[in-house]
Image (tube, rainbow, N blue to C red; front, side, top):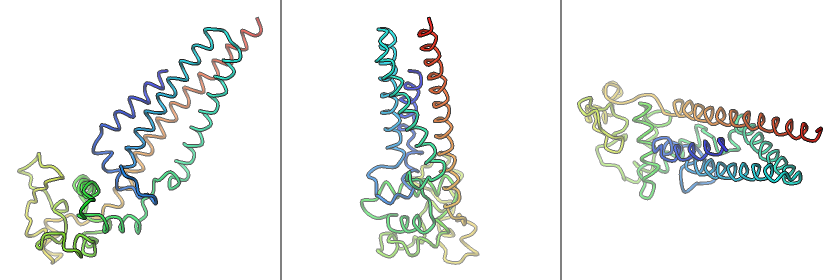
Length: 250
């Protein structure tokens, strides 16, 4: 029951973490999702938590009425849940691309170039601006990625913008500025075409590496939480089997 409550609370916390959920929009998915990936992860955690709560109530009822058939059914369902969680954890750890956790250079670059600044892709645009502001980077490999983006080729950008303002060094006089409304320290230098000039006012490093490290960190946190939950459930299963064995020997 405690595991179920923790899962529900964990899912609610993740759902309320706007920054983390928004950044997960940048994770490449072969099948386009209507919402960021972590939005669905949060809902899945809450649903699984409710199922675990229901299972715990069923287990308490089975023990209370001292019905061996219900206890056996409870143990069977618990084993199925543990097996499913183990398979899911192993797939996430060994083959993350099968779980939608993929950050290949070519795929992500194509997503950025097709979606940034395009009407109807405001959430994706905000996610890129957040990543560039948070990780102090520009583009996937560099700011040159935006030169061949739809944002530039379709003339959706302002004529004086070569890269988004989130690529520019922020003005330290505005500590409360948001990634949705970046205030560059020197916009003119940031948008200059000469590397010797814009290097002083623009982020040079690409965002792919920090995004990959961020994704690995988030995956590790989820796996650690799953491992702790699985350990508790295995301990519970051992205690239940031990109790049943002692009762049958009396």
